[in-house]
Image (spheres, rainbow, N blue to C red):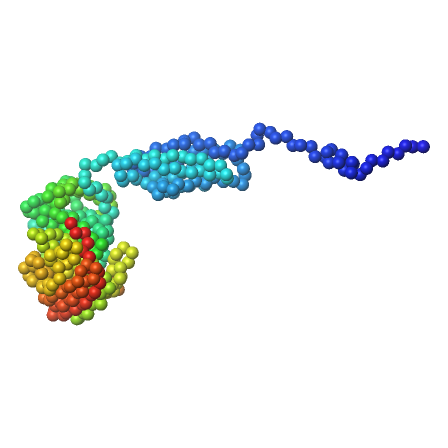
Length: 434
């Protein structure tokens, strides 16, 4: 008779488990990923440029990619799309101070840092040093002196919009005399060095002190001129581009101004005198003022010269007027109160303006084809920003209150006997008082 052995089921199940699930050994190769960087610190030149970080991934994971970022606004165009390198651009350092930043590399849960150090630019011998992006010029031929070509032009950092200088701009105007252009329709300033002429003789190889100066516009687009007392301009043509380097003393400061690019001149080399006619306002205007600004211009023996603008137009984000509309610009002489308010009273348009209580009458001049209003003027803009002018010939400006709450009445007569009337109540602080 066979002997039968009975094994409880629970014991069988337990034996089965231990016989099928052997522990898996852990090998040294199964480590976490890590980023190995060949260049953990990078030195960048003051002028900036394109740079690269080289790296490798140890124990990489198929579904993980590397990313890179930096909080510094002078490090741009970071690109980690190619395995093994991260490229980026460093912007020029316009200060003399060294600066540092960090580029963070991330791969899944691991990260690494690269330090970027950029040198400051070398200290300059100039008080003002700017590269201008824009050029505007007119060639007048031999109109001002026989046998010598007259080249009028601007090197500028803001646009001319419908012959109007834009707000917050620097406009370096040059009245230069050189060899007569062989082809006036394609005139260019001949290569060479030109010197500022204090006598403004219009001789070849000079630019005149009388008509060469810097115009700086404020937030309202009003300009203040600063004359050159010394200056040298170097010109070099290369293909379709022309480079200018102006070294000049302006208002006691040494300026170095450069431009490199197309320098196209409009041809106005006919024998007739340059046209100074202007489109004139042909209607009476009642101005509903929505914006008012007052700017300090100068002071003579306690009498301040102010530029004041009232207009019925809103401003855009760059402080430019939103067309269409009307603006009236006042050239006013006054005493400023201790709190900076305009002294209350009636101000009168007069030819010999300059004393407290007077306003300069309006004039329109043409400078290299650009209509420039001065004195007290009305400008009417259409939807495209084209202007009609109303130089003020007579009238009064009355003000009371203070800078926080001024009360203004304007009653002007323009050329052509049309009138402008306006009322305003609101803040009128004088800005930029020096």
